[in-house]
Amino acid sequence: SLKKINITIFNLAILLLVIFDFLRVDKRYFNNDDFVSKYELEDVFVPNSADLAILNDKDPDFRVVNLSTGFWSDARDSYFHKSIGGYHGAKLKKTQELYEFAMIKDGRLNIPVLDMLNTKYFINKDQSGNLVAQPNPGALGHSWFVDSLIVVDNADKEIEFIKNFNPGNTAVIQSKFGLQSSTFSPDSSDYISLTSYKPHQLMYKSKTSKDLFAVFSEIYYRGNKDWISYLDGKKTDHFQVDYVLRGMSIPAGEHEIKFEFRPESVEKGKYIDLIASVCLVLLAIGTLFFLSKKK
Image 1 (tube, rainbow, N blue to C red):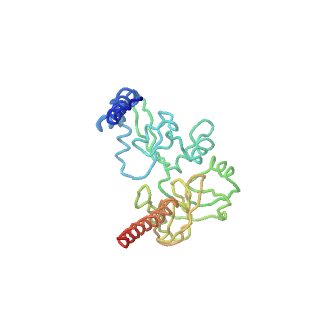
Image 2: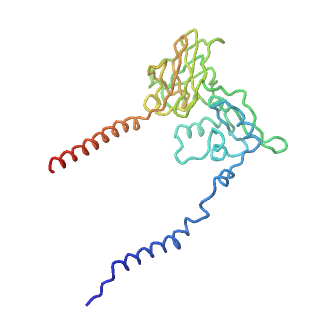
Image 3: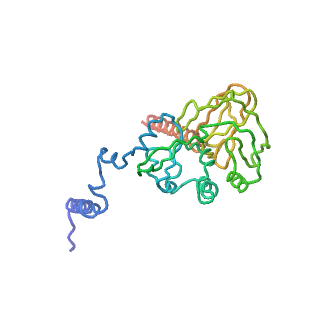
């Protein structure tokens, strides 16, 4: 007759095999060397003199380009700054196309494109080989008013246009957004400025004597769907301009402009979650009711 293994001994043997697997096999791939203290982790990237100089700038929203490295594929600068470039496996197609077709011109950086991206600092080496932070006087800031809006037929013509243009004076937009080519006359008393910055919410104030068109140095991403724009608390459309940025028509007077990230999927998920929670509560109440009735 066949002898059966005692269930307790069997379970104990399985447990020992699992422990052996964890200790001798799994630790080949995931061991104590993979755990570091917070102090050790913070020492992985040490700020250099250029980083420290830039970090003293209290402006909450600007970008940096490191000319001493291959900035488009080097992600080190993004540890300290909002850098243009850096490596990411899911980089936005629009930004990649901007780099390939407009940011580099005749083998050199196309500075007006960097100006419209609010590149406030360049990191470069001085004559002694030390890294220094060089302010970019041409950086256009968080937002600005343009003199003219040019309408083109498609994305190809749009990116071709921005290879040779002055982004401080001109904005370009595709015809699919329904706007017409226009000219404007901003004067020295007109202004628009960033008043509050959060990753999911941007607040601006404007004051103009006439209707104008503003460009915001923020990446256009699912505009009016996930990123919602408001003018004095009322939903107002914004548009994709200069291939990657945001633009909006600003009426005369004093106004508050807000951009808020409210993804459709998250907003719908809130309602689904609420309905599921209500159904769960009703199910629990119904179960208790039928059990008490049965008793």
